[in-house]
Amino acid sequence: MPSQYRPQILGWIGDLDKGTKYITGADDRLLYANDNYCAFIRKTKSDQIFYLCISLSLSISLIFIIPLVIYLLTWLPLKSIDSIVPFILLLIVIICFILALYLMIPECYQNLFTRRGSPIIFNRKTGKVYVNESYFFNFKSLRNPLTFFHPNKKRIKEYDWAHLQGVAIHNFSPYSLVSIILMVCKPHSHKTIDHIMLDPARNGIGSYLVWGWVNNFMCANDLISLNDGIYKWEQETQFKKDIIKGQGWPDWMVEAFNATSQKELADIKHKYNVKP
Image (cartoon, rainbow, N blue to C red; front, side, top):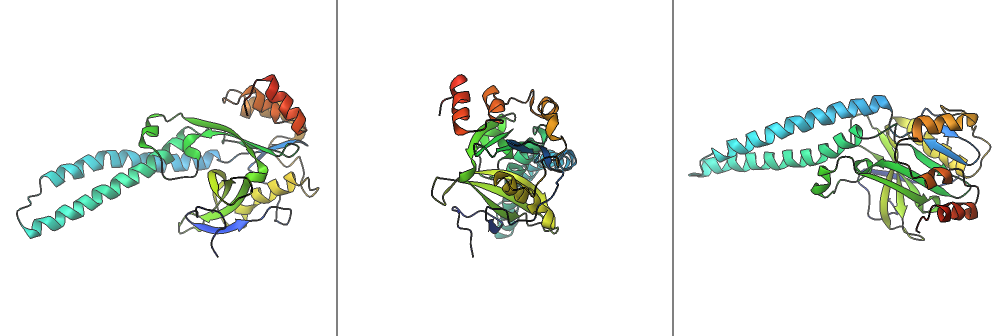
């Protein structure tokens, strides 16, 4: 059965229901939680370094290999049928290499310019979700090539939890890694207008722990502990100093993390002249 969300996402495994029925537990991606909001890291330093090395080495290799293959292409004579076959093969190889480079550069950028794990914030009192991430961290493959000249480009957004739907996908690797994507849907529809990476590729049941914990948190379920994070609930000041400060988060958004109602959130936005 295909996903109910459109357009269909590549590598789809299944749509995830909201609620408290998922297995959950303390997870090393949980940074901080209090009674108002929780924060999850989405990129561990070890994964970031590993994928950066792979994507950077492949990108550099392709940058040198592509001109070389193009140069070889210009030397092929086209005077007979026998010479046309290798010409076409080399042309196909060039196209494949260019497509690979087109995919590797964003992967390189998002690992190089992801800061402090690119935390995602969930406020259960207002039902809002906040992201501050590299533009290339976003889950999509079609990008304007001109954006490649802006490696530091970021997106800082506020979302409604009600408009976010979980989807599990696989990455077609031999290791059967699963990622959890948040599909941003138009209100009261299944039409997807954006994607948010919640939990990058992980093995087995561990792939669903973050989704389960977030659902329990947003439902105010007592099964979770607010002290499961790297920072304990009384260490909010230290958490913000280490993870949030100096990363470009707007002042209103940092204050909105702790908003306890829609009215308080509206007052904060009015205070900072935030337009709807």
